[in-house]
Length: 486
Ligand SMILES: [Ca+2]
Ligand SMILES: [Ca+2]
Ligand SMILES: [Ca+2]
Image (cartoon, rainbow, N blue to C red):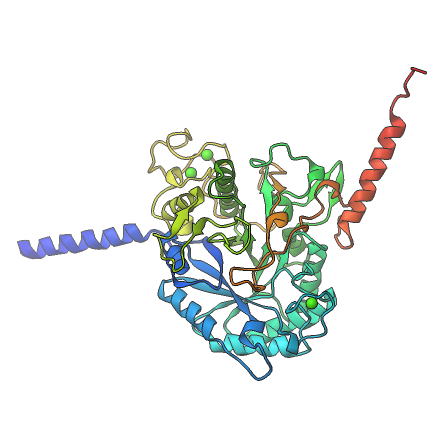
């Protein structure tokens, strides 16, 4: 080999090594964003942030507004634009057009129960159309909230859960079906989840990935939280709430374990924290929420993807769930965007944390990887430098507990259901019900009176909680020493 060949070889090896170093390890964890039906600039923003996935609305009633009319063009455009940017698309198929559904019973259009066989047919059509482009499909959105499903649990099981899985698999046999997309508030999400799993088992089917939504908060954002204030994030994940010795329902993960389905992967497809861009205290808490979510995801092998709600504030309503504010009549990224602090935080995690495909280390990823409340070099003494690969403890960097039932040792009660529901509107940017829209106000769960008295879920937890507290109040009054003053 002559000198120039050696130089060339050396250069090539440097280039190859450089590419390998930049590429980092294959990710084991993923992040996504709720985007509704995004414009190109919103997809530009998602691409720049570095997330792997976007969740989009595939609203059946918009694609088939009238009998005999089918128009996928708006969805085609979004899916192609996302793929072009290297984003994976997770569409949620929701909401029957009224012409193809049972009678309205609540005065809300497009949340009615699909007629028998119709959701299956539509899911098959959509899955077949996007075969090769879309690999993961979500069935409906928060069906245990009446705003989104104007029917009974049994109707949902029959017409959405079982039919939906059949329809997707018929249209795209290699696709994965995800559900049940329950809100972990409202009517007995644990019972709805359990019934969905049982119905699918009976039909010889199962979800490929389990999804649910979790807006409950963390103790860091609600330090005065008491157990009667409602569920914490952990309680709506894998560790049900216990209040004064009373067990309150089951967490979704506990239901999976109970049903022998602990090996199923879990995605949290909605979580977030509302913060007006000008409110420094709130945007700080928003960062804390995101950080705690990601720290928890890294600890649990069965939880592999999180979709934050949502990429930008919805300007049509007063909520402030976005990671950024987007303005202008024909916005572009980044010139029309005002980024909240959480934007750079998430970017830092994605760029650095190897589990998310980042090329940095635990000691520079913005996360407390070992649970000692100290983050990165130089604050965490486990880090000798910013390039140290570990914050130092045995649980560090754990991309999974590896066990279906392992208790991960974190303190119980690290969250608090916050005011998300009450501040959130029912409609999306385009002024119509979107598959992934959150419910209107007043749905923020059992909170102050919300201790339920059942281990097994089902029934009205709020009612039982109220009864329990009434009993405790009566007992405490009766047991009080009587005044000696006449
Ligand atoms: Ca209705
Ligand atoms: Ca760290
Ligand atoms: Ca630490």
